[in-house]
Length: 463
Image 1 (cartoon, helix red, strand yellow):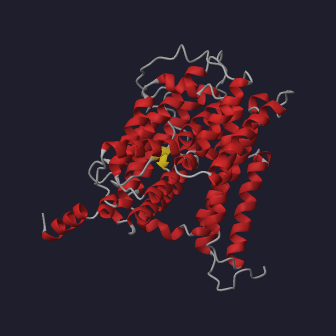
Image 2: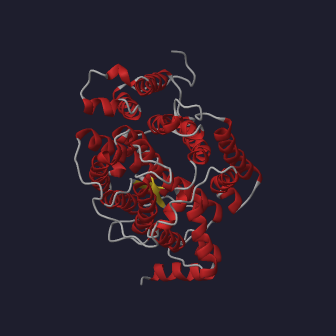
Image 3: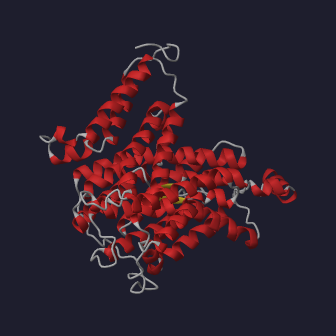
């Protein structure tokens, strides 16, 4: 050990604050375990929700008598399991893989606008195509670890803010559909009924009340507690069935290539493009953790290691039928709030997720949550995605050039998403990619930002 390293170690040993800012510090288990569980609570709902949404889009049934219910439970199960595995890639690391920081990995919302059209109404038959794309996209994401630092110039706040906003806008419709009773009820008298909306509103009101008037864990886990409140109301109203819980096993091992492996050009292209977006998001999360928790900039090794772990976690998840993983921003805020930078705390949380993922009864219990309860939660979450995009856009200098780039990219992307029939004469691959809304918006924004000459107009200049 060098003299400088020995001095750093002595400083850490003598200064409690320095210990907390050290990623290698291991707090006593009496503190580490609750802190690890707190990280799981902060991300739990967001982690399993994409699996439920994709399963619903594919047409998997939610009722206790549905023949697809085991597949839904399996997707929930592997979402927990491989979020934990991907988190270990980050916190424990292997060679260049992993930032070795308190980064929590979880199933990504960002990929939903691409995944939903790929599986819409096709059941398990489309899952092999989706999983093959996830594996290839994960490997592509892994390769980005070597060049991620050189790509950031092409993604200023104008582009990244628009991408995040489009992700949220593509998903808000899903939240409203769920709150109204789910897409399977569209066209029936029960869709949009007071019974469904009242439960969803309980979730929304409880979440907002805790977020703004509570402190500590109550505020951090506001969405989870809001869902619990909505679940209780649904239970009292007779909307909850436990028929599928008794038949679920206690231990189950995930199955590789459960739905097969079917390569499709549209699916692979969409996943690879979104891998770039996810990689940039991870760069921001790593920087947020080191700044918020340790008061320093992230190193190049930490950024590249985090990107490697992102890609590897996604590829491994796809092999076993789970969805793409990425770093979770809500846990970045938790590190800044607690001031605890220990990666070992997050490792304990990852082990808890893995344990839950190996127990199908946990997934079976989650599958009993009525879709209208989930709708209340995702309305809040997807709205926050939109708000995060608007917040990123607030850093943009709104001169004529940037306003035109934003206007054209948003209009084309959102317009194609709202009116997919406008592209009915295109080949199937191009139609799937363009009607996602997100991909054409992002591609236009990146291209126009690189090609159009810079301007020095004052903010708010007229077009």
